[in-house]
Length: 160
Image (cartoon, rainbow, N blue to C red; front, side, top):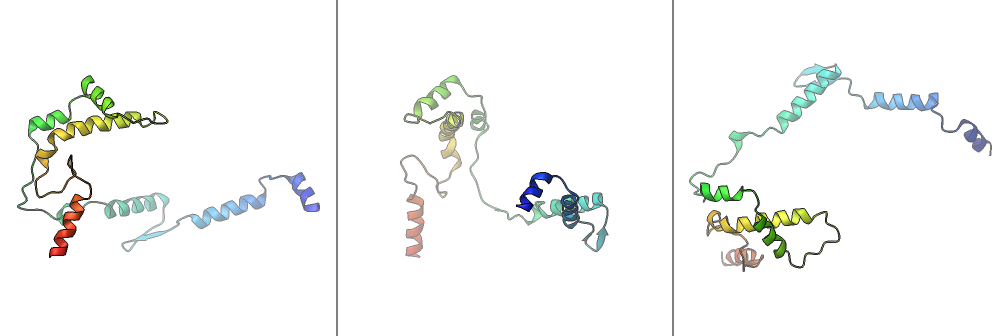
């Protein structure tokens, strides 16, 4: 009862004890000094720069270490085909995409614009995908099952 009465009188005021706890925690979480490559940093600004420099170096992409596929002859799109992919959408393309959605009945229209956009892009890609994918590459084509490639790979491994 007495503690409850004290709490009602004092409430949850920002007491000296509360501020002392916060300051102690702040000091505990503070990085006062940092040693990087045998060099010690004591100032907050230099510590920030050292940490930033470390992560920039750590996540930098090393182009010389990247494996290369020399002698591989990949198919590429012609200038004309590439230009057709970046043309502005026509009204006809959007109309075709919307009518191709058929039974698409979303609860809300939040993803509707994305769905139409994806359909228009997919219709454009259908026209040029066979010019980019070679016979040795596996892809999902119209009339082909998703598992066809997996089953073929499994059969090849069984025969080997």
